[in-house]
Picture 1 (cartoon, rainbow, N blue to C red):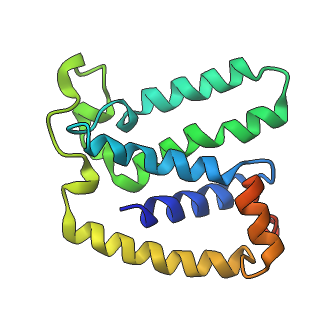
Picture 2 (cartoon, rainbow, N blue to C red):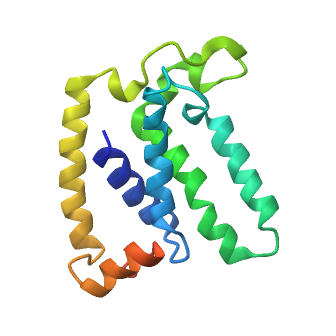
Length: 161
């Protein structure tokens, strides 16, 4: 389940934040990185909002006084938060509210992405359809727009209606 997370997160963040300085490559990375925890034996800290919030605070503190740098790097924890929404991680109380329900609640189970094959395939299909819509909506048919996304992480046609 990669297409659903990448496309869903990029579209949601682009439409909600409408920030030309945001690096959508980092949004995509943050949205798919928790899937790696499937190899590590279950949902771990990347499936908890406390990790994303800690990263948000870290970016704000480290890049204090550099507004454009903050806006660019906030994309990664925002992508992590988008993953939690798109994955339905919030429905697993013990994982979502870690460490408040105990420190031993992480790992040892399947990550939500791999626990529902049929739904996962449906979401991938929906992600492909949304991807076609996003391709048109953000003008990615234009080579200059595509190049800006790949090299700088920007959606140059973001403000287009």
